[in-house]
Amino acid sequence: MLLQVKNLHTWFRHQSRTIKAVDKVSFEIDRGETFCLVGESGSGKSITALSIMRLLPQSNLDRHDGEIRFQIDGQMPVDLTDLEETEMQQVRGSRIAMIFQEPMSSLNPVFTIGEQILEAVQLHFPELSEDEAWDRVIQSLHEVQLPDPETRVHTYPHQLSGGQRQRVMIAMAMACEPDLLIADEPTTALDVTVQREILRLMKALQERTGMAILFITHDFGVVSEIADRVGVMQQGKLVEVGETDQIIHRPGHTYTQALIAALPENLARTEKHEVIEGELPLIRLRQLEIHFPVRKGLFHRVADYVRAVDGVDLDITRGQILAVVGESGSGKTTLGRGILRLTEPTGGQVDFDGTDITNLKRSQLRQFRRNMQIIFQDPISSLNPRLSIAGIITEPMKVHGIGENQEERLEIARDLLEQVQMEEDTLWRYPHEFSGGQRQRIGIARALSLDPSFIVCDEITSALDVSVQAEILRMLLELRRQRGLTLLFITHNIGVVEYVSDQTAVMYQGQIIEQGRTEDIVNRPAHAYTKQLIAAVPRVPV
Image (cartoon, rainbow, N blue to C red; front, side):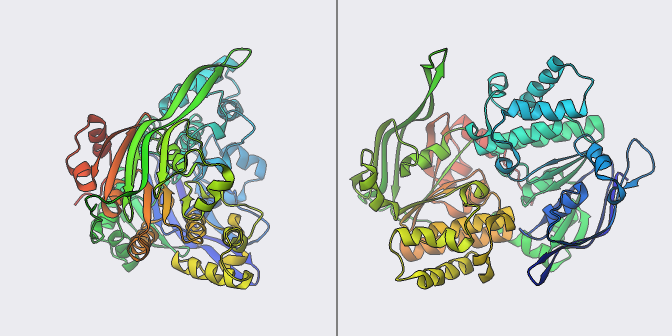
C-alpha cells in the first residue's frame, strides 16, 4: 500500500452554505497501480487530489480532516495531514507530483517553458550540474513528443497550442519521477495519437519505477485502457469502487449506470443533415491561408513562415455540423479563428452567407459578429476573472442591443444557464469559483446569448464529464434543429464526431487531407494519416 485515504472530509463555506466537496471518502492505491477517479464535474475528484497534495484554499475552508497515509522509502506510512508545511514541500514534486487540468492557469506566462521545468528539476535534483539539468529538461520534452524541443524550450506558454501546453505540464511532472503521479484530466487537450503515446509513456515509467498513478478523467475509453481499479464519485461521495471490467460492464450503482449510458457510443444516433443539391453554403472558404512569419537574426528578418492554414477549400452548408479533426498544432483552431477573422487570413477568401468578409474593415465586420460566435477550448483564459457570470453573459448582449434593459438581459442569462445545467445563483459568482467543466458550460451560455447562426466549437466537450457532454451535444443538436444553427466542431473525440457531426474534415500540417460524410471517414478512412487517427482512439470494449 502506497497511499491510504481514510474518512477524508473537505468542506467549504460559501456565504451561509456548507459545500461538502469531499465527504467521507476512503480508498487505497498500491505501488505500481493505476487508480482512476471518474464522476461529474464538481463531484469532488479534483478537490480529493488537492486535499492529498495539501493545496487547498484556506480562506473559505470549513472542515478538512481524515487520514492521508503515504509510504516514503519503504518506511512506515506517514499521515500527510500531520506534516509541517516545510516537510510537505519535500513531498510535493519529488514524491507526489500533480498534472493540473488547465495548463494555462498553472504555467507562469513570464518564464519560458524550459525555465519552468528546469526550476522543478533543480529543486528536486540539486546534485545535477546546470548542463545535466538542461539535458533532463530537453529529454522530458522529447518523451512527451513536443516538436523540436531544443527550440521550443525557449518559447513561452502563450506561443503553444492547448495540447502542447498540456504536454509541457506532463513533462514537468514526469521529470522528477515521483512515487505517486496525480493526473487531473491530463489528456483532455491532446489529440488521440499523442494521448496514446502519453498513456504509453506513463505506463512505461510506471513499470520502470513502480510509480502509482491517481488518474482523474471522464473518458471511459482511457479508463478501460489504463485503469486497474476505478472509483466513481458523486456529490463528494465515493459511491462505487471496483475492478475496471466490473465498473464498465457490470456497474452496480445507478449513477455509474447513468454515466456509462451517456457515453457517445451508447447514445441514440440522430438523423444527419443532408446537403441539398445546389444549396449555397453558409460558409465558403477558397484557398484560405494563415501564415505566421518566423523572424531570426539581429534585425529579426523574416526567414520562413509557419503555414498554420495552407490553402484550405471548404464549404459548410446552413444547418450542417462539420467536425474538424487532427493532431494538436495541425491548424484546426487557427482555421476556426480565421473564419471569424479573430486571426487575420494572409491569403484566400472567406464568404459568409454570400458576403466576402475577408477584407472588410473592423467597423464593417461588426455587424457579422452577432451571427458568428466561438466557444473557446480553455475556459479559464476566455472568461474575464474580474466580471461576475452575470456580467460575462450580459455584456455581449448589451453591446449588440439585445434586451430592453439589464433586467431583461439577466432573465435571458438565467434561461441560458438553465439550458447548460447551471443553477441560477451562478450569475453572482466568479469564474474562479467553478470547476473546469462548469466554466466551459458558462462559455457555451455566453456564445448562445447572441442567438448566432454559426458557432465555432473549439474542443468544447473536452473538459466535460460524459453525462453533461451528452446533454450539451443534445442541446446543440436541438438548437440546430430549431434555428438552423451551423457548427464547425473542432474535436479529437471520435465518439463525439460519430454522434454529432454530418461531415468530417481531417487536417494535417495546415491542410485538409480528407473530407466527407462522417460515417465514411470513421468506418472507411482513405488516407494513411486518418487511419492512424482512428486506430489511436481509446474505446470501451464491447
